[in-house]
Length: 426
Image (tube, rainbow, N blue to C red; front, side, top):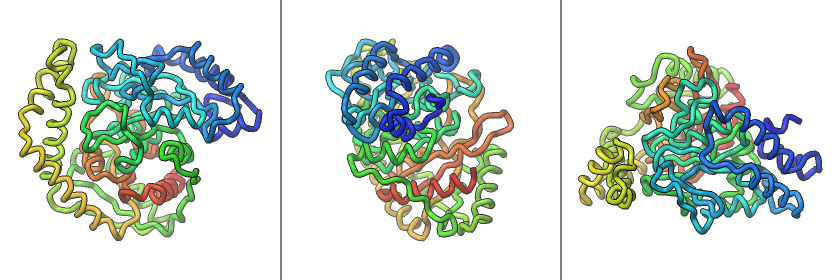
C-alpha cells in the first residue's frame, strides 16, 4: 500500500484489518511532509515526535470508533488543548487553549489523530498565510483554509478541517484541486472555532474522496455512519446557475460549467438554467453589513491592544469600516439574509441541486491573495450545503472546480447527488 495516498476510510479499514498501523501511516505522512513542506508550507504547527507518540497510543488501544488511527489536519483557528492556536496572527503566537473545540473532541473520541495545525489566513479573513499552491508554488492556494486544502491535495494528510465565511472551503478546494465541503450552517458545532462572522461561519472538511466526507460527517454530527448512496444520475434535476456574477468568471471556467451541464444531460440528468431570485445585489450588501459589523466587534481586543500586529488592511480598513456599521444597519442586513433564504428555498423546490462556478478561474500567480468570493459568498449566506468537485484543469495547468449547491438541512441527499455528478463527470 502507498500509505500516503490512502483515504481516511481506507486507513481505518487497513488498521482494523491489521494490514497497517497508525504509526506506519503517520510515519509515511511525516516523511511526505518533510519532503514537500519546504515548498508548500501547509503547516503552522507540527511536532513529529508528538504525532508518533499519539499514534503508538492508538495502536495499543482498543478501537475508539469510525476513524481509529486516521491522521487529521486541524485549521489553526480551531482550539486544541495540546497545540498552539494562533489564528494566523502573531498576537496569538503563544495562545494555548485549555480545552479542545467540540469538533476536535469528537475526532479524538472516534479515534482520530490530530496531526497538527494547518495554516490559516489572519483570523480566517483576507491576509494570506505562508502556504503555496501544491501544483505551482508561485500561485495562490486560496484562503482562508489554505493549509488544509494544500496538505490534503499534496498527500500530507487524508482529511483536514476548514471553515467558510465567504468561500474559505470551496475556493481553496478549487484552487488546490481537492473536495471542499461546506455543510448546512450549524451542522458541525462551531464552538471553539474563532469567529469571523458568527451569523454565517460554517465548519467543514477538505478531502480527496467523497466517501471520506460522509465518514467525517458521521463523526462530527455523532450520528450513525451513512455511506454515500449515489443517486441515479438520470433521476436528478440539476439547475445551471450562472449567478449575476457570471461575467466575473473567465472563459475557461465558463466553458467548464457549460460543458459539465452538457455532459450531465447526455448522461440522463434533467438540465435547465436556474436564475436566483430578484434582490441579489441587495442581499450581498446585507451580507457585507453583517460581516463588517461582526468581525470588527470580534477583533476589538486585537485592534485596541495590538493594532501594530494586525495586517494593514485589517487595522486600517476592515475593522474601522466595520465599526461604522450601525446596529440598525446590521439588523437590516440580517433581515435581508433571512428574507432571501426563504425566497431561495422556495425557488429551489423543483430542483435537486445546482451547479455553478467554484471560483472565477484558476489560482492566480500571486501568493499574497486568497482569491475573490463572487461565486461563494451568496451560498454561505443562504446556509445550504456547497461542495467543490475537482474535475477540470485550466490553460495554466491548474485546477478548475465545479461547485454543487443543495437544499439546507438535506445534506445526505445532497452528498448522494454530488457524488453522482462527480462520478458522471470524472
